Figure (cartoon, helix red, strand yellow):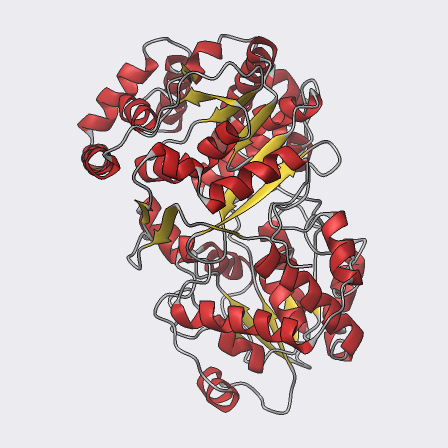
Length: 556
């Protein structure tokens, strides 16, 4: 059975190098029930887009020498939402060239939304010498594999992240023969993408690159090669609520930071600004409204249909010891965006979680709560996964039964995360958004990784695993944040949740409150001229030309 699986993997890897792969891929997709449903849905979305758009979005060919290269998306709705980014670059004086995946539906969606300079990514792919076997033979662990780089392109990191996402695995067993084989193939794919990235940059010589995710294979290699060639990379991601985007410009100076982090320049401005109670009221109102409306990161449905409980209700519901303080562990989804930002104290998110839970088991001086990530539900439905969540699997690796002082809040809970601030005395995360929120309420946040909001004066950080674990073992000795620390956290959160989001007017982006949190896009303009005169397009294009790291609203 294992040999057959390996043969299958090898055949697919070989097919990907052929010019007929897109034809073969389409045939395979159309043969499977899941594939047929996916294609049918994409065709329906494409038809709807064609009906709704009803206008000409193409500009006359620009003679600008500046080129922005856009790594094409693969879903019709996402392509529609990207219109605001492409047109902002055009308004800023760039020609947009889109690198397309091999898919006719995708090609038509880009044409419909005003892109005519379309180049298949596969044109830059070619056979490359396979060094994966030799390089893997020099490794003794997954940590060694993650460090593999080719010409300053982090192929090992991208290969491991991509394989973990594909397998929905919190960790990879280096000594497992199947995993070892899959890892070799994924490394080879990354080597091919690294070669393609070099060819793309050398051939097209872009002045800028636009990506969404920059940590999986294909986008990751292109990101690294652009940074290596001093080509700025612009990323866009959904904001914490509907109709907002988070925009960031990357260079060699900030290439490892989280997209929703604050630039050093903006953080310094926030620290220097006169802080008043009204700023905290604006921020608190934003958090309160987004949680209660279910919009809080609705891209993955984190707070849809949740209920607020008061402190006494939660103590009773969770059977907590009211005499003890309460520490809450907020795990990241182990296999999603692993190794994307900063440096981790542990091998991966799963390793951090397991070691943290082990310490929690031995420390009964506080109540412990494990809050399984709510985004698991949407991601499960998107992936059509029906098994246990990674956090539960990891707990089962440690013990058959958790002690009474540790409670688990499952992903399916109807308890609003916002309610937990009333009972939480300590927050534990690697670098999750929850750490910023908790610190705003004076709750000590203990981090286990860099790249976002660590070492800014309002978190408890560590330089080693041992130091971190010691802090967990003695967590009850930590006091509430000081007034100064809390204010620093609020200033930072104000920058992230009030300053950073780009508010959209010409296009409306929202996520349905269904099992897969489907993206919904509506155009609020009737002509191309109207779009180019819109406030949001104007502000984004001015930011592009400014050279600033963050898109930031003028609030300071």
